[in-house]
Every structure is written in C-alpha cells, then in structure tokens.
Amino acid sequence: MATIKDVARLAGVSVATVSRVINDSPKASEAAQQATET
Image 1 (tube, helix red, strand yellow):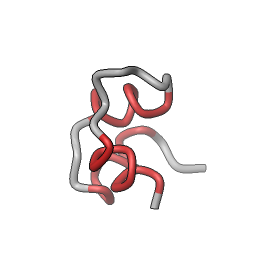
Image 2 (tube, helix red, strand yellow):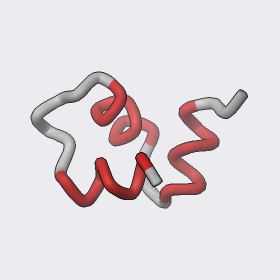
Image 3 (cartoon, one colour):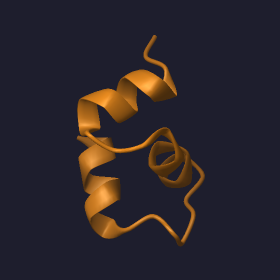
C-alpha cells in the first residue's frame, strides 16, 4: 500500500498537498488534484 509520502514523491507535490486533496480541501488547486489522482 502506498503512503502519502509515496504519492507526494511520485506526483511531485508536497505531503500537505496530498493531504489536502485526500480531504477535499478548497485550498488544493485543480492542478494539484490532477497530479495527485493520476
């Protein structure tokens, strides 16, 4: 199972950004959401 750190590293974003996307935060940009979800 992948960790948040693994996802962040592969997506090229911070751990905080991955957390924001997972928790559907309005602070997560559309670009960050797309990078994290692919």
